[in-house]
Image (cartoon, rainbow, N blue to C red):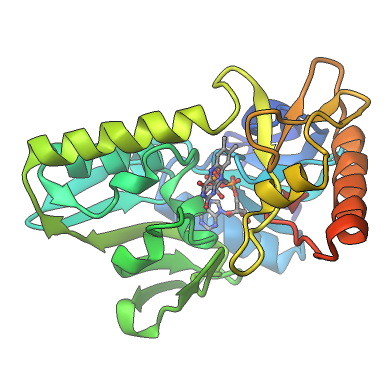
Length: 292
Ligand SMILES: Cc1cc2nc3c(=O)[nH]c(=O)nc-3n(C[C@H](O)[C@H](O)[C@H](O)COP(=O)(O)OP(=O)(O)OC[C@H]3O[C@@H](n4cnc5c(N)ncnc54)[C@H](O)[C@@H]3O)c2cc1C
């Protein structure tokens, strides 16, 4: 039995991934699946495991650069509404792994639940945010998690609770294949005050990152006590261009993909930035962006 047998309705072959990522670059996935419900998702994960097919989970693709040659194996996308639901109960919000983080944040604010406002401008899904503990200097998503449902690479469904979860800067122990849903326990506050705070964070963030219509990626992790963007700027690398990839003028930790840019251009620019920051400032930058 092949990996797609019985899944013909939800699996496409050679699906271009560029349009599914923030950079809008890169080649196709060998197999690309959009399961219609949780049972189908679990059955597909089990099949991939049995057939020894490499499987990956794609959120909004805001932390991924897909190589020009594409990716082997199965890429699963939680696009169906059943994976994107957001429910409020008392001071908790439970949302699907495919829910947009921004919608989770605004739902919290509108219902008078505080904690997530600073995360308002982070693109992507709740699942992607939990996988990498997305955050800002002041707050991260991990600190609010009380429970999560995950699916392992073998297709087992598990509940994970606050006490056995660890979150650090850019890191999370929620590292199973799929974060199916998660519950965030928040704090009550005045919705009007929260809406003001949300707006403030939104304005500050929007001013410090590339414009919305640009294809861009957030590239390096901040080294301890330092900002990657400031280091890149200090090394004189703002505006550096390789092919169609350029270091952003607004915030040097973003690389912008101009029309005609390839993933290879971005990879070469990443190497150049890394080696020049090391040479000029003695700091070794680590990638935050995942390369597929
Ligand atoms: C303009 C811009 C601004 C950004 N600002 C910030 C910022 O301030 N702070 C910050 O932390 N990050 C920031 N990022 C990076 C990025 O937005 C975050 O890492 C985001 O949380 C990724 O979510 P995603 O859904 O796009 O995940 P993807 O990029 O699709 O995937 C990232 C990783 O998460 C995994 N994943 C995705 N969904 C799931 C799931 N349901 N279950 C299990 N694993 C999953 C993927 O397999 C992959 O390993 C920024 C990026 C951009 C382009």
